[in-house]
Image (cartoon, rainbow, N blue to C red):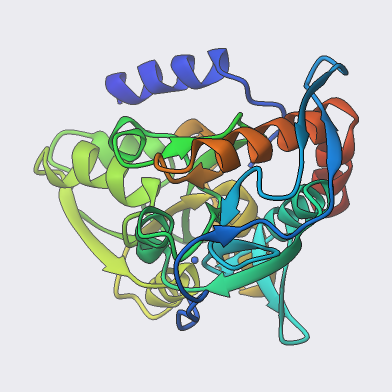
Length: 289
């Protein structure tokens, strides 16, 4: 746990503001093309006007659209409602697109495909409850953090696991369910499996990890606190352990090869943070209690 306490301290020092994937992938289209949106002036985080976005100032995966890669099984950040992807990340992306004079297109895919979609130019931005990690920073650029997430542990109400510390006790040997390639997977792999304290069972969807817990295939699930609360509210007999696993920062991932679009998106996001829009969106889905 020591290294994760260090990560927690690092996260607390970054630009986080507040507490915080699987359908089939849909293609976003061909190569990058010039932005066809109208001109707009975007304010910086301090309220000043920092850049002016004009026609042709940046390129997007699909002309006139901001294409967002996500995994819509991570409520309240992204989920499917009425056949459409909804949630915190979807609304933040829509607000960014509006500032840039673009139409938002959301492509739902496996979580571990979202970064590759950005890197390959099939998507402009990945918003999927994405945590900033050193390994991911080597592959993509991250925007300013817009939310803080908390990883927690779900167990059955009668579980012998009563604290996160039980997972790291001498002689521990638990089956831990995680969503593949999420930070829950990364943390549990490093801190539990590699330490010989248990086995990690990986699933494509967050909901599948919870179902594995219900059916007794795993002893616990490591997952973000907000979807954890949603799952526990829906499924009888489950609870969230009181102790937190780790705290982390959420941001949007973007290609390192499109600095003009990165600047435009990040400046738009900072403006939405500064004027309270991002906080209003989060408050709509996450109550203070």
